[in-house]
Length: 309
Image 1: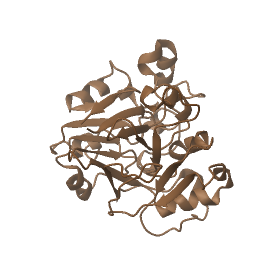
Image 2: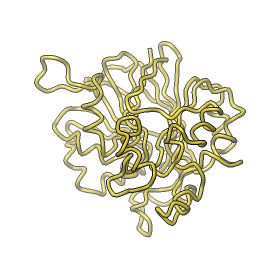
Image 3: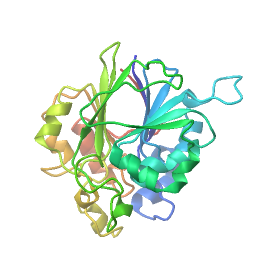
Image 4: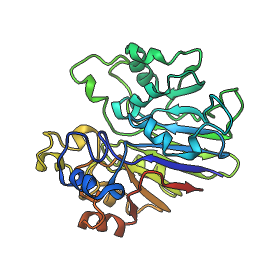
C-alpha cells in the first residue's frame, strides 16, 4: 500500500514568508492555521514503516516534528524511519533541509549527477558524513529501487524524467559545477509500489507543459504538479519581483498555456498543486482563483495531508 504525506505545499519562503506583507502572507498571519504552509516536500512509503522524502526543504525539522509517521520509534534513543531523500533539483528550498539531518543517522541521498556536483562543490554539505549518508546518482529514464539503510529492498520503484526547467537561481552568472549541457537540473518523478502497481507523480518545478510530459502522466492516479504562480507575470504585478514565472522555471496555473488548461484533457484521478507561492491568490480559500482551480478538478493541499493509494 503506497502512502504519501504532504510535508509542505508552499514555494520558497513558505506562507507567510518572513519578510513579506502580500495579501496571502497577511491573511496567514491574521487567520492562522488554515493558510499556513511550509516549503514543498512530500514523504512516501510502501510499508508505513520506512519512508523516503522527495526534497528536503529548509522547513524540514518543523515538518518532521509535525508528522508522527516520521518520528523515532518508541523506546529508541536514536532512530529515524527515513531511509532516503530524493532530490528533484538543487534550489535552496529543495536541499537546505539536508543540513537538519546531520546527526549521524544513515540514509541515502539520490539525485542526478548535476545536482550531486552542486552539493559536492559546497563544503557545508560535508556535515553529512558520507560514511553514513551515501550519495547515489540517478539517471534519467532509468528506474531504480531505493534501498533501506541495511541494504534491504524497499519494494518501491523510482523513475526520474526530465522536465523543462532551469538550474538554481544562485548559479546565475556562474559556472555550473555539473556542466552546462544536458538535462538533470529539473526532474519529475514517478513513484511505484511494485507489489500493487499503484503509482504517483511528483513535478514541483516545470517551466512548460509539453506533449511529452502530458503523455507521461496521462492516466495517473495521482499527480503533484507545479503550482507556483497563478499567472505568469504575477510577481511583477504584485510588486514582489521583476521575473515571470516561466523565467524562474515555473509554468502558471492559468492561461491557455497554463497547467490547468494544458492538463485538462488528461485522465488523471487526483490532481494536486504543490510549490505554491505566497503571491498566488489560489491559496486563499474564498478567492475566484481557488474556485476556478477546484472547478477544474485541482486541489490545494494543507500541510500534513495524507493520501493512500
